[in-house]
Each structure stands twice: as structure tokens, then as C-alpha cells.
Amino acid sequence: MDSNKAKLAVFDFDGTLYKGDSFVDFCKFYYLKKPWRLWFFFIQLGAFLFWKLGLLSSTQFKSLFIQYLFWDSEMEIKRMNQLFWEKSHNFNETVIERLVFYQKEGYTVLIASASPKLLIENACLKLDVKHVVGTELIPYKRRHIVMKNCRGPEKLIQIKLAFPEHHLAFAYSDNKDDMELLHEADQGYWVLGDGNIKPC
Image (cartoon, rainbow, N blue to C red; front, top):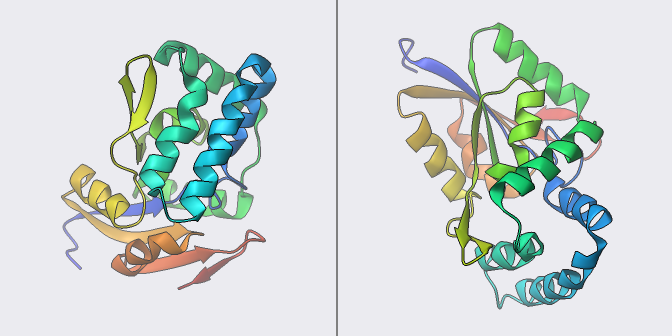
């Protein structure tokens, strides 16, 4: 370990800091606020079935899933997202305590998620975390598409691109896709379904 490098503590978001899947929960919130969009559910259901059958990649599935945002500007999506996070308090307090500890100890704290960055930025501000890596939504012909899903190996690539001069000291995740990330860190931690933490 290079003691001269700044230390990085990385946290996955969904299932780790957040109890559940914010990507899905925000969609449900959107449908409650804009019920005329519910017909997009059939697109999502079809995409889910094709993904489970291996006929779609996770990137293609995510691009189809987010089509319920069709017609809305980035400003409107951000407005809706802010409303969502004002009401949501579904966080894992055990993991939050670790995050706060690293902040106090002077670590650079990064939230790295496969969820769209646009949809978790307000939550990160709520947690007083300013560094976020996530899946980028690209506006395209009045809809949004995903070019690169920030998941698995791609997540680790994005972390290294964002913080090339940092040393990866700690990493937390509940997802097996982050195995490489957890092993790359000096110490990786699994976040279990009940919210408890164990070294991996």
C-alpha cells in the first residue's frame, strides 16, 4: 500500500446503503405520481422476461426499463427524484455508520452504483456524499438510453478513472457482481440481507 496516496472508501448503493432497489422504488413512485404512464409497465415486463431468458443484456434491459421517463426533461426527472428522496428514509443504518466513520477519518467516500447516477444524486447529497459514480442516462430522441451499465467490472473501471491517484482501502456491497471490487480493496465487506456486515 502506498501511504502517500489518499484513501478511498467505496459503497455500493442499492441493497447496501439503501434497503432495497431504489431504481425500482423510484419507478413505482413515478407511476403513483403519473399513473397514465403505467402502460410502460408492459414494456418493462417484456424486457424483464427477455433479460431472464438471456436474450437481452443488463444494459439493454435497463435502457428499456427506463422508458417510463419518456417525454420528461432532465429538469422534470430531477424534480420528481427530489420529491422521492424527501419521502424515502429506507437506509441501512449499520452501513451508514461505517460511511460516517470514514468521512470523519478523512477518507474520500465514494458511492458507486449500477443505478442511474441521475436517480441517486439527491440521496447522496442527503448522506453528505459528494462523490458519485453510476450508470449514465443519455438523452436520445425524447427518451433515455444506457450506453454503459456501471456494474461488475465496469464499476471498478469507472472508479479507477474517477480516482486514479487514490488507494482503494475499503469497499462495501451486497452484490456478487461486485466481487472483483471487494477483492481489489484492502478490505472488502459483504452487506447481508438483514443489514449486518461481514468481511469477505
